Image (cartoon, rainbow, N blue to C red; front, side, top):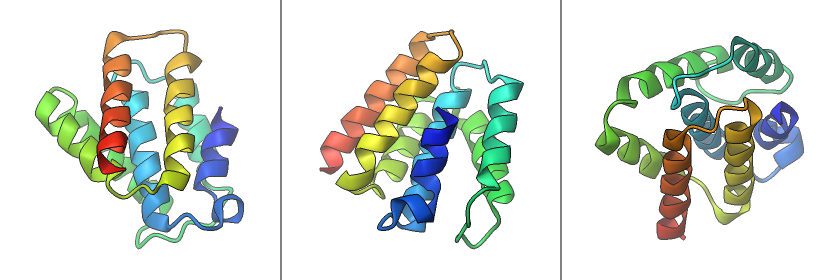
Length: 135
């Protein structure tokens, strides 16, 4: 599953995806990872390790981006309106080419830790809805 995340984010694998799309996709993946209040240390360590395997083209390094995104997700996690706003902001950046991959990775993330939390399913439904609205 982490290989799918890296393949999605890696410019060598995605070619036509912009850095903004990779960042938006990663932000949604991080949201799914954190929303159930059950983030495996192993998940986070693997994600951070794998992020180092590709060229990051953002204005800040990938570690800064991930830390900033995780902090934002922690802050918004208790506010349904803030979560929806975050999702709309991220999905507005995604083009059709990247939405299928993001949805699949988010779905796989929900199933990866053996804890299918209702909040994760709700967030995935919000992501899908927002993508449809942006299409």
